[in-house]
Image: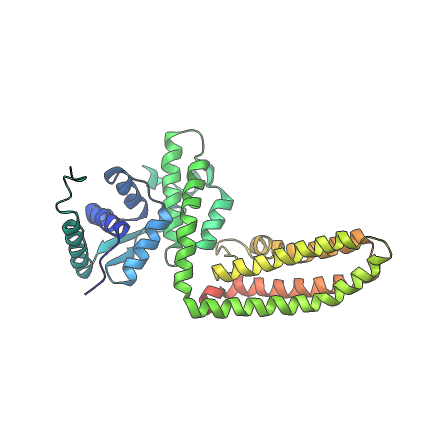
Length: 107
Length: 218
């Protein structure tokens, strides 16, 4: 059974799922900031995505280079079926751990 | 629409901070280096459109915030045994160069003893060795040489990648010998510097022409 995802990995994968076909570095960072209400360094996002890709949990492909990006292409990410399974298991595991803590701290 | 900018429009706008870009190019793995730089440039232009002032502080924050994770990622990617081998090779190289320089040190100190200038030379040499040692360790940690930009000319790459290394290694030694008045050693030191210059030049040309970089070799 694959190792459960870390908290930041879950956050990044959730952002990729929300963005669908538009999931590339800058948009993922912006999604984490607006939806997750937290900051994330672009380097941390790319290293996380690269690690997830090496585990086969996400896949990527290059878009067309554009002038506004200095002639550099976007790298689009999408969740693989294996990634989706691991994501769901990890979220469920986290949910189980948090269950019953709504009344925390206990009075 | 930002993506409709022509290359000419783009060239007219303020550029992202060059040093920060270079740092990122140096640290980011080749797999996502261009995409990462492109994302930052896209955001840079977006912010520039909203404010007349170039968002340099924002760009630097993005780069410095990314540095720790990029270094960690590279270290993990290199692997323990490769990293150990690399560190060992740097250590051997450092010891060999130091041993070579001991003869120069002795001659310099002997020459300076008559001029009561030895203490200052010892301090300078200590700084030189500490800098050289630190440089070796940092290079081993990052497991990559200075990243050359594919789009730059050979001349620019040599000026940015080779010249600083050459000046750092040789400048202090030559300056200390000059300051100490050890003129009899200058031909030897100049020959040594020239030899190192040729070696670095050849290495620089190889990296530029054939993209031979350490992280590709290991």
